[in-house]
Image 1 (cartoon, rainbow, N blue to C red):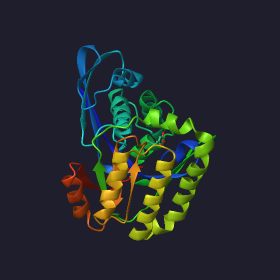
Image 2: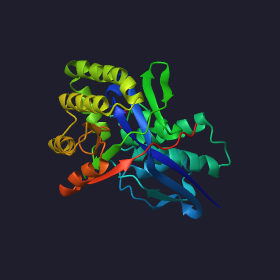
Image 3: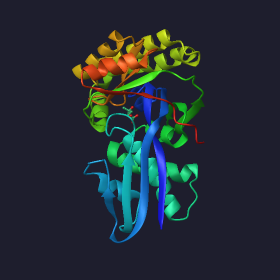
Image 4: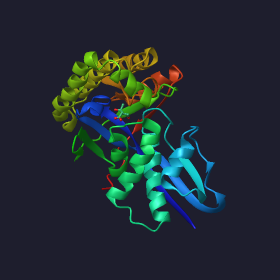
Amino acid sequence: MSTSAFAPGKIILMGEHAVVYGHTALAMAVDRGMTVRLDERPGPTRLENSPIDDPRMGEALHRVLPQNGVGVHIDSTLPIGRGMGSSAALAVALARASLQREGRAETEDAVNERAFAVERVFHGSPSGIDHTVSMHGGAMLYRRTEAGPVFEPIQLPQLPIVVVDSGGAGNTATMVETVAGNLTRNAEYLACMGNLVATTLPALQRADLPAIGAAWSENHRLLQAIGVSTPLLDAIVDTAIAAGATGAKLAGAGGGGVVIALARDPQAVCAAAAAQGWAAFSVSPAPRTA
Ligand code: MEV
């Protein structure tokens, strides 16, 4: 017997890091993701093939699978470790496939519990935004509260979003620690990011590309201020804007990973990125699933 499940990755349109401190962030599931297939096999449970080369994989699998009897196959259309939610997509796909394998219903609670357990192996104490948007698809506003996460699906118009891959991975847990290490200084910047999400919502809903772009660039400056950007990410932002993007920001934890740019002419941004040796592609939202 074999079971399989797909889950999408995500981009954080605005508010990463701030979301860890209870501010609202806006995330969108994307049309790329992870597929997990589980086959029955004799002997210990093991990873048969995987694009993820991470020593924590064994522990992650054992959060949701038995010690023996399962062969795990993972395929990805996401760049790995680039802030596009590859671990969250893996977590959700693994949660779904493991529930199917046990003949259990893929209820929201059951998927959430398993996916969050896997996410914690990779990210320590994540806000939960990544696996929540992967579970639900579409776009959502997400806020962490003492009583648990509060999220609200949000209907966005089609936005011309280009992802530019810096080619290097960032470490989410390390970047979150970097921000926490200087919280007295960073708190004000984080609050500004949260406010920026709220004030940009009307522009997002009417697809006002200049206003959204300006907000993304402002969000990037705030991310620079809390120390999670890099000279390479800054150079990618500048290149995208020089190629006609109305604005751009790093997306995800930073320290590496991807930049998102908003561009009326996505091809021009992709070409400018390619000229510098950076992979770039357009993304669309993944359909809402729940
Ligand atoms: C990572 O995709 C987003 C961060 O805000 C961390 C988190 O929310 O757990 C940097």
